[in-house]
Length: 322
Image (cartoon, rainbow, N blue to C red; front, side, top):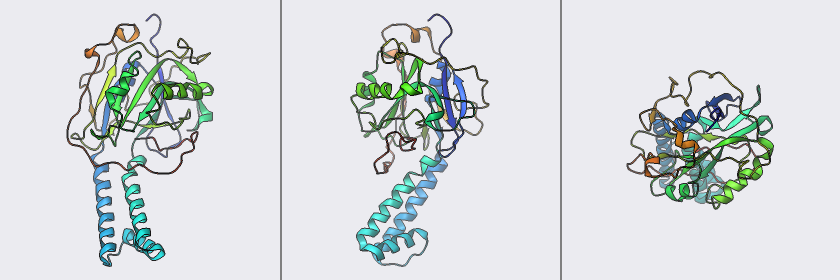
């Protein structure tokens, strides 16, 4: 590919409720490596397991008529007084859902966006988007989903609640040219329809965020690969009538997940050797089996409960983080 290689604007946030983006501009190598780098979170898993155990103990006490005391038991007991055992069961299920969903408040998040300088995490402050990100949590096989996108370069990684018997993963297509925020809606719908709506069908706003790859421990089942092919060019494919300017040259904001040098992060990096984006990424060579780097095996972890409710399709929510 002639000229300067494409660069990709991203924003990262230390925690879910952080509103000030850390802006960065990545090479394809850095972007790909970061999407195949799983943050280890064993402490978080232990905290969740401990909370779930205490909720189970409180529920067992309610069922047996025992007075246990404590915050969880008190919540269940008040619910029982209001509406009997069924109301208490609903409160118990809500407590479990909240406990198992606490990862949403602790996982680091990112978005494929260029924010205006001084902007906050909201769609009005997004200038352009550098990647199309598709969430798959319906259980569709990973290889089947990837096969729909073989003509374009993409990265796939499993997410926090992935299980081998019910895959949950993210498919990321870096764009040869960024899409302006105001043109994002029809472009995202094209991606969802091309995926057969087997991805998460909730419309993603320009400021939507996604959890960085993370696992409970080294033994957790996980998978990631990169498919080598030309980058998706929205203008060439006739999906937009204009494209955004390339991102500005920004100095690295300091140690980061993307470059693997964050001292606060423990991670499992796959492949172990630094990823190198070779020339075939930018030409029309047919991909073959050597274009996949697959990894991960082991026993399934407990199922992550999803939160209910009807989402506002254009709200900058946290529901699709993991």
